[in-house]
Amino acid sequence: MSELAVRAVGLAKGFGEGTARVEVLRGLDVQVKTGEMLAVVGPSGVGKSTLLHILGLLDRPDAGTLELFGCDTAGLRVEERARWRNQKIGYVFQFHALLPEFTLVENAAMPLLIAGIKRREALERAAAVLDAVGLSPRLDHFPDQLSGGEQQRGALARALVAGPRLLLADEPTGNLDAANAHVVFALLKELHLSRRLTSVIVTHNEALAGQCDRILPMAGAGVSEASKGVSR
Amino acid sequence: MTAVLLLAHRWLLALRRRTHVATVSAISMVAMALGAAALVVTLALLEGFQHAIRGQLERGGVHARLLPARGSELPEGEWLAALRQRHPQLEVEEIRSTAVWCMANGVALPAELEVVAGLPRVEVNPVVAARLGLSPGSEVVVASSRLVLTPLGPLPLRRRLRVDVVREGRPGEERGVVRVGEGLAQAFLDVGRGPQAVALRAREAKEAWGVASIVQEDVPEGVVVQSFQELNRPLLAALALERTMIGFAVALVMVVAALNLLCNLALVAAEKRADVALLAAMGLSGRAIFRLFVSVGAGVGVLGGVLGTAAGAVLAFLLDRTQALPLPRGVFVVSHVPFRVQGEAIAVVLAISLAAALLASLAPARAAARRDVLQGLRYE
Image (cartoon, rainbow over all chains, first blue to last red; front, side, top):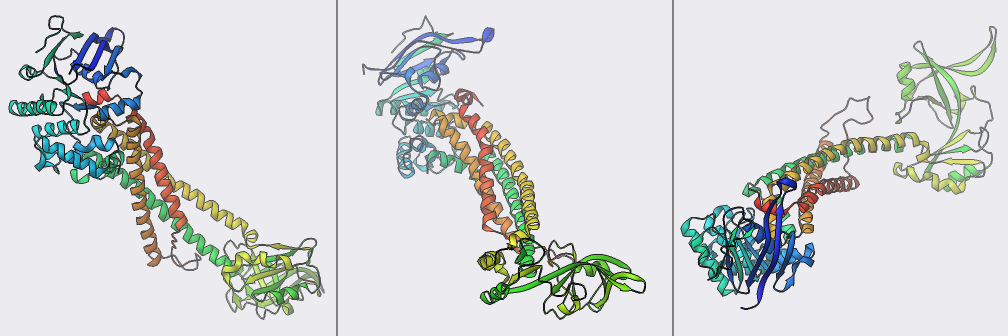
C-alpha cells in the first residue's frame, strides 16, 4: 500500500488563447497510493475533470510531470498512451455510458476487443464481470432497454473488464437518483477493494466522497490551500 | 472480427436499432447502388450494340484483304490458286473495281462497280438501293468513265442492269457499291486485267479476327495483307471511344454518390463524436479510428457496389432476354435494344465503387481521427 500509483508534480493546464485564456490547473501536486480510493471534490469549473483527463492520459499537462505506477508518462507516444488507457486504466463517465448499437455484454467486452482479444473470450470475460455487478440477466439487452443505474453499472463493468490497475470515475453517480447513486457507489467501492484497484473519483456528492479513503478538495486553479491534505 | 470491423459492421447494419448512423449509411449505400446499377446497365447497353455491330461486321464484311504493295494490280502467278488450295476454310474473292455513276428514277449516284468472278447476279448495297429507290427487279443505268465513239461523238459507256439482290448492309458503309459477274463487267474494265484486290472471308464468322495471320505466310512479296482490325479500324476505334466516353460520363454518377457518401460520413463523424471519444478513452488509437471510418466507407462502397451491380446485371439481362425495347425495322441493324453484361464490366464497376467509397471516406476519417477526444467527451 505504500507505493505510489499516481505521482503528479506541478501540473498546470490552461485553455484558450491571449486574454481569453483560463488557467484551470496551476502547479497542482497529487499523490495517490496504490490501493487508495481518492475523492476529488470541488465546485464546477475548478479543473476536476481536467485533472482526471490528465491522469487518464487523455490530455497532456502544459507543465509538470505525471508518473503512473512509477512510469513517467511524458515520454509515452500516442499509441502507447492508447495502450495504457486500454490495459491499465479504467474509465467511468457521467454521460456516454454505453454504445447504443451494442448489447450490454458487447459494450462491456469492447476494451478487450480493442486489445485484440478474440470475440468469444472477450464476451465470456465481459459476462463474468457483468455478473459481478449483478447484470447477468441483462447481457443481451441494448442500452435503451436498461435503466440509468443499470447502464452505469454496465459502464463500471466495462471499465474493469480489462483488469486495470487505476480506475478513474468522473461523477459516476451524477446522472442517477439517490437510491441508484448509492447502489452504484457501493458497488464501485466493493470492486475497488476486491480487485485491489487504485481509484480516483470526481464527485459532487459529499456523502459519497466521505466514504473514500481520502478527499482532495479543489478550488480555483488547483487544490484549495485551506483544504490541502485532508484525509481520512 | 476486430473491434474496428465490429464497430463498422454495427454502425452500417444497425437499422433495426433505428440509429441515425445506420439510416445515413443506408442512404449512401442506396446512392452508391444506383450509381453502380446505372453504370452496369449503360456498359451492358454499349456492349450490346457493339457486339451486334461487330457480329454484323464478322458476318457480312471482309475478314482480310490482299492489296498490291505497289501499283494497282496484284502480282501474277499461281500463288492465289495455292492459297485457295491451302486454306479451304476461306472464301477467296478476286476484286476488280472501277468508279461508275448509277442512275435511276432521275437520281445519279457515284458508286463503285465491283467485279466478282462467277457472280451470276447483279447486287447493289443498301446505299445505292436507298438513294436511287431500288429493289429487286428494278433497273439501274450504270455509266463508266470509259468512252465509246458514237455518231454524237465520244460518250461514257452506259449499260442498263436489272437488280437481282439488295444485299445486307455493313456497319459504317457509306459508299454505293454495285457487284456484277465478269461477263457483265468486261465492258467496263480492261480485258485481261488482274485483280486489284482479293477479299478473304472465313466460313466461320467468329474466325474473322484471325484470317490475316493465317494467310500472312502464304502471300508473295509485293502483296500486303490488311487484317480485319485494320479494315475496320475507324469504326472499331469509334466504338471503343464511344464506350469509353459514355462509360466515363455515366461513371460521374459514382462520383456524385461518393460525394454523398463523404457528406454522410462527415455527418456520422459528428453524430458519433461522443462515442468515438469514449472508444478513444477505452484505448482505441487514432489510427484505429481512421480505419474505422474508412471501413464504414468501404462497407458502403462494397455493399452498394455489389447490390447495384447485381441489380443492374439482372435488369440488363431481363431487358435483353425479353426484348423489352424494340427498335424500328430497317433503321437499326438490330430488332431490339441489346444488352450484354460482361464480367470485365462488372469487375470495373465494383472497383470503381470501392475506389470511390475509399477516396470519399479518407477526409472524414482523417478528421475523426484527429478530433480532440476531450471535446467529444464534453459534447452533449
